[in-house]
Length: 219
Image (cartoon, rainbow, N blue to C red):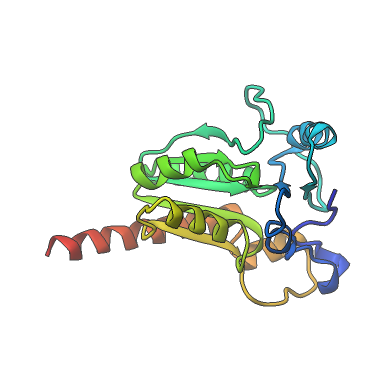
């Protein structure tokens, strides 16, 4: 159980938990989980206690939130689809799920239809949902509160390459290759474009890029 996963805010730069996804998922038989909300965390703990191999569950130093939705049990390597979008799909790993939902609300006001998937597992990945997203959606965005290098988005890229899928529509959002300084967690998320407004802006930029690429391809 990994407390202070992601940005620990006022605890200072040495307390941010940003590297665990990359260093844990390389171990054979390791299961890597991240809850999207408080209800997920309870169910993941129960899952881990009954699972036959090591499990790492990451959760933030933050107020627990509950996202209203139908109950869906934790199954090894299975994600939870909160909605499928016409224009983009956000694959969220962990605690930024509520921010992704907020971003989808912002984009809906701009007539942009975005689906949200609570991925739950970084290892093993839900390859079926990754395949469907990359085949059907013009833009697929991975979101994680962890280091991009070797993290969840990298794992999705690896899986997509193994499945021989076109990854040009796949974009990653997370913590860049730098040490994050001391600060309020909400402010740090905003600075890194990991809050709902930053996520929404990233989706619109990715859609613009996708349209530009499509125009160039037609020429």
